[in-house]
Length: 455
Image: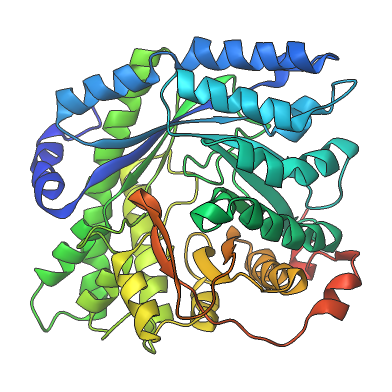
């Protein structure tokens, strides 16, 4: 590991102490393809045993590395092969049972989330895919640590509108079954276009089919560090100078994250996978992507110019990361989750950050419509239409986009959904009240765009 400049990494310690730089997650990504068998109970036993075998020391090793480098590692997680693929080999699949197995294993190895209760249905659904999708509401109700993701579209395949229609009702039902916690089940469910198979962040992490047996992926974050770096520039610094400073800062953040990731993978005896350098905010003051926009000179997130500022930020972060590491992957860029970002929460409360503006920002951010609370009486077809719009942005722009919206039961605009921890709180946002029902009920598949034909 001679390519690391350790002196530069030591300088980064000040970022940790003052500006909330942390390793947001170390995620063990694990193949379960060898757990498939005809009996669902036997499959469950194999899944449980394999997670324990590989993840038994994940928490303790992460704690040792925290102590060794004085770098906080906030989350320890596991992601697995999409469970729809594992379960459909069973004679009588029981996906809720398999979700409970994942939950028990996650609890046993002391990780906060396990991702991979997933299906990849961008072009069509198998019987196993359909069964998993229909089991999501009950599975997320009966588990605490399981996260679910469904890939509904891709640039190569187009948009599976039958599955998009289905997911509108699944999200609504999932929120309803967890209404005592403001629909938190929907906060653990995400719909993707162009989902990456090496993403370490929840709720969308799963072990991609082309990945190895077991790998260690790392997600590092530091929006507070980026904001501080911009604020320390001269007041007359132009946007090119700001972009260059963001690149330099992202370089340091990425180098630190890869050092930790490689050390962690070495201790676990598995290959290092990727470093995802997404700027993932938290509700903590000063740890906000929206705060970066203000440091650039915008009055608030949502002001005209926000999309341009986010495009520059996302690009500069990726450029800095690529210079620091040959193994940048996952999502990598800037997240804009409303409930998890103190600046976004404030802007939404004031009404200056609207749902439509957030959708425009997703054309240039790392993910999409993330952790947005909407009225609980929103029609299923409207939720499906929101998903369809976001899938279209990802499909046409050849990028990953996602939707994680929460129709909060019995709440409306002016109310708040309270989750606590990293999930924060979310003001219920106003959405367009026009009907999309006839459009969504047409179903079928929106064909892939012309630029997908690039073989």
